[in-house]
Length: 389
Image (spheres, rainbow, N blue to C red):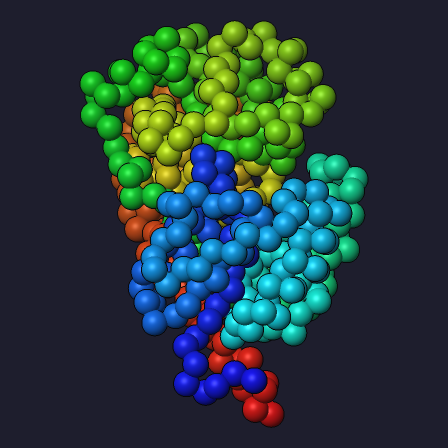
């Protein structure tokens, strides 16, 4: 039985905080939690890791790391970790709230829970994932949504999608926009030339950043770039940043069929410093996924003064506003035409850059941390009201 004057205790799933391996949800976890733990020293935060954490993730003295086994990187191990290890840890900690920034919950605990569900791509494009993974997601996530006392997500699009897919009251879902790191700022011409000399033989380039996953639409991006180069006489390259974790046969085949594949540069994963430099030196970002819950590279490009080409579907128009060229991600002519327009129309580029700087102010990690904390406190108050009724 918790005492009324006991310090607020919040347990958090931090299994995606892995040094040098932060991706979209990992960055969300990192950027929001380092602010929340600093801003609320009166709260005890219990970080639940699935491996020994790097010391840099123990943000403040009010953070207490706990390592739970096994490492949760496979559907069967997800079940063991969340339903046994996490449930056991929560019984021991007795927190007032369990926060899961990646949306996974433990169905085996009565602790009030808040899940951050970034998107439901697996519901719309299940075949983009391995069979066992998609079976896990489609079985458990509806149950996580019903289990959670509240949900948070990163766009109005995802809020509507979650409410419709899982028959959830929209009033139960809070929107916590992603942010872009403050280090993403414009580079001067000399620095841009240095970056281009390093990555693209000194040539201007379109940039893709993200996991090389089918829903990122690399097949059509490769086809569109090929068409763009064939129809426009220039030496512009395509630079691709991201791990080939989900590199599929169709993506590989599309790349091998390219006439201009020698003009495509693969950089793999880059650290945050290099990611900023390669973004800020780009001619434009080409982010033409067919499904996104948000799209952090769009906000990062805005901060760098780099124009954006992105898709006219799911959350991307919401993030881009009027500060990007919107294309049909299923139409390579639409993508290729936007590339050509971005090269030829300097007035348009300048206008998009100006609007991008204005729009960047909406998407900050300070704002994200503040909205996530509000959602956490909303969940906590609702749990207390439930106990008192």
